[in-house]
Length: 141
Image (cartoon, rainbow, N blue to C red; front, side, top):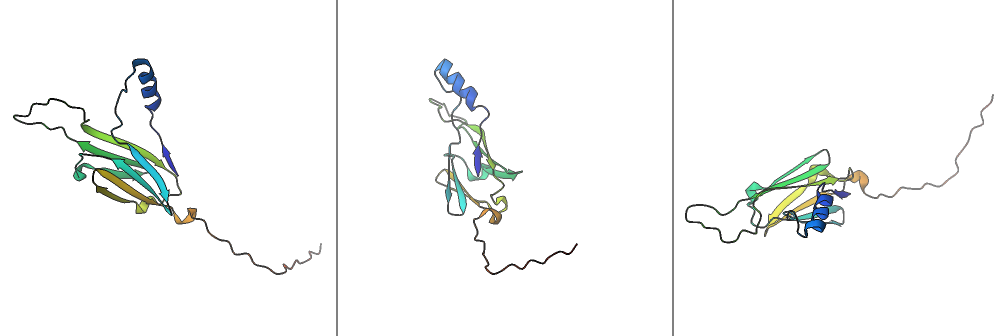
């Protein structure tokens, strides 16, 4: 239903093996799970303003973008800067069995939560079985 893809994951893993350090931080880690008739996805976005979060769906690709700004200004002297700043983006490929027209999004305590319902045509359904004799007509040639 959900497909996670990161084209740079293999390159990061290879670089980490050779140099012993991660090349970039996981700026937008996520958890995804199915809960009944919907999928729930949580993105960690601490320190991000809700106004800077964009969620788009196009051709079954869900894109989340967010921006965290660094503390700057007159009289500010940075001593340690370990939290990444800038624009972050993450994409998930959604299966065609999800209803992308009814995605719900909420942001609370630094966590963006998306609820994606399963499409009606993908939900399990019962098929009625009828009983009785089926009549066959003979065909005269």
